[in-house]
Every structure is written in structure tokens, then in C-alpha cells.
Length: 328
Image (cartoon, rainbow, N blue to C red; front, top):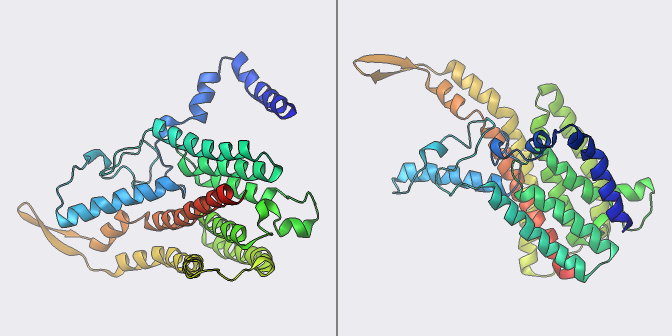
């Protein structure tokens, strides 16, 4: 009851002034931006990023191989133009706000049902984290920065109730320090989530800082905690899973190298590449082919970052959900 009263009071104090001034419709339009599209300009690394990327792949493959598929002309450039607006798929049926709402609530009900059956503190913490995680995974027009709400929840709870700084840094939250399965889930979510925020710090001067800071954090937190909870895989399947997860995390080195070098390589190629003559109508026109290709692929580093991070965050979501249903 105290928790309910606290929530009600917060809602009244925060929304009351807007209701008195008659600004609730304007507030709701800001809180629920249904006209701004499924994805943000830089795709948040969630399930919709993978669906959007799949639509792009299917479109290109169908055009190359001549597949007889129904293509929505409005969706040919809708999802990759780098602008905020309605997201329309070319091949896959377009996702509507109602679809995201139904999927989000369906997943949250599964976790809340488990919480109803096992109403313990640790179960509450994990269910709360998964409900927030679900909103990030399947919400409408999710911003990339929203992943911090998931990571903060993974970091912010200390099951032992001890506020000692060292123990807090070693992440007692969500049993991450108690067993290897939760630790691996936390590691994948953290690495993918933190890397997905790198494009927000995009100047060359910030690149070295963000990389060094993240590496130091990983050594201090992940390496020390990993030694504490490490368990050798119990089956051949788990050996393969463990190898795949380590390979995935190592892939961020390759991705960061590509993201750093791609703008320099495309700019240099566009500068040194000769112009080619193509026939247009009755005359020949010189076209800078490399510059044209570079302009079309301008957002490739952002797309690869979003999709690669989405793979890890979706996997971590499935892992955490499975662990919660099976072990709590």
C-alpha cells in the first residue's frame, strides 16, 4: 500500500500542473510520439533494429535476384534515410504502435505472473528489470539512450543491502556475483549497451576517452567479478554457447576499428577516385562514383553498430528471461 501511495503521489504532483493548465494533450503527444516512427534516426539496439535490418537485407536480395515480392515503394528509403518520421518497411509488414504495445504487455505479463507466484525481493528486482528491458526491446520510437535505464537497473540493486563501494562495484545485483549464468548475461548486456552509446560521442577527441574509460571499467568490474564466479561449461552445448558469446564480445574490436576507419577511407577514396563518364540521354555526363557511393552508405557505421549491439542485447534479454522463469 505504501508503494502504491508513493506512485500515486508522484503522478499527481508531476501531472497535476499540466492538467490544471490544460496541457495534458500536448504532454501526451510528447510522451507517446506515435507520429515519429517506429525507430529513432539512429536505431536503438533492440528487436526492431534487427527487424528493420532484415527488411533492408530482403529488399536488396530481392532486387539482386529478381524475386517476385510485393515491395512497398514508400518503404524503399524510409528506414535508412537518417531522418525522424514514419517507419515503413519495404518487404516486411509495417509495424504499428498497437503491435508494439501488445507485444510489450504480453512479455511483461509473463514476468509479472512469475512474480505473483514467487513474491520475493529478488524476484521483484528481476521482474522489474525485465519489465523495463521489455519496454526497451519492443517499445515504439525507443531512443538509444534508453538502454541506460536497463543497465542502471542491472547495476543499481544490491541484493545484500550492503552499500560498501567495492561490493557495489562488484555488482551483487540480480545474482550477477553469485553465479556464472547471471554474470554472463550482465556482461553481454553491459558491453553491447555501452558500445551502442559510442556514436553519441562522435568527435575524434572523444574516441580515445570513451574507449579507454570503457576498457578500464571492464577490467575493474568484469574481470574481477568473472574470476569470482567462473564456472566451466557443463555440456558441449554450453561450450559452444560460451565460445559464441566470447567471439561476439571480441567482435566489438573489429566493429570499432571499422567505424573509426570507414569515414576516412571513404573520404580518401572519393578524393582520389577518377570521375567516370556515363551516358544520359544524348550526352555524356561525368559522375563521381565513389562520392555517390559514399553518400548512399553514409549511415553504414551507425547501422552496423545498432544491429550488432542489438544482437547482444536481444540475446541478453532472452537469457535473463529464461533464467528468471527457470531458476527463481
